[in-house]
Structures are given as structure tokens and as C-alpha cells.
Image (cartoon, rainbow, N blue to C red):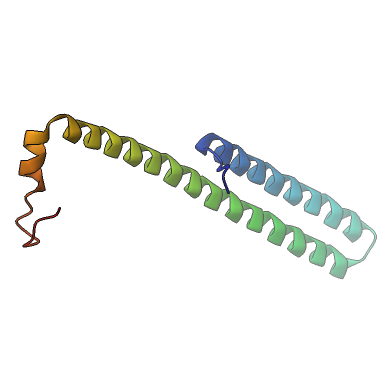
Length: 110
């Protein structure tokens, strides 16, 4: 788990899932049509249903991967902001003492 994917890699994976979903849909329509031309209606419908399910699941995976990508970007931005705030606070120790006084908790945060 040391190598976490970047947001760019996640977006690429989501695009790949979307392309695979469309390819599965097209392949299912083509295969179902060929089976239907042979006169086997039941297998044509089964082929269409199975390829629809595969395409829908791939689209779902693409949506989840896009959501992970956006969360990764947001967490990276928050992490950057926290680093800046911590660095700024450590440069000014006189302000840090004032900011450390927490009137809401009722105790010293140190």
C-alpha cells in the first residue's frame, strides 16, 4: 500500500472503465443481434441483459473512481493548507500562545 494512485491516474482509470462499458454495450448489442438473427430469442435477451449488467457495473465503478479522485484532490489541498498554517504558526510564537487559549474546552490544550 505504499504506492497510492494519484488523482490523474484515478481519472485515467475512470475513463478506461467508461470506454470498457461502452465497448461492452456495443459488443452485447452486436452479439445479441447475431444470436437473434439465428432465431434464438431467449439467448439474445440473455446476452443483452448480461452485457447491460456488465456495462452498468463498469459505469458504477467509473463513478466511484471519479469520486475517489475528487476526494484525493480535496484531501491534498487540505493537507497543503494545514502545512502552511502550521508553518505560519511556528514562525510567530507570540501569536501561537494567544491562539492556543481555547475558551470553549475549559482546559489548556497543551
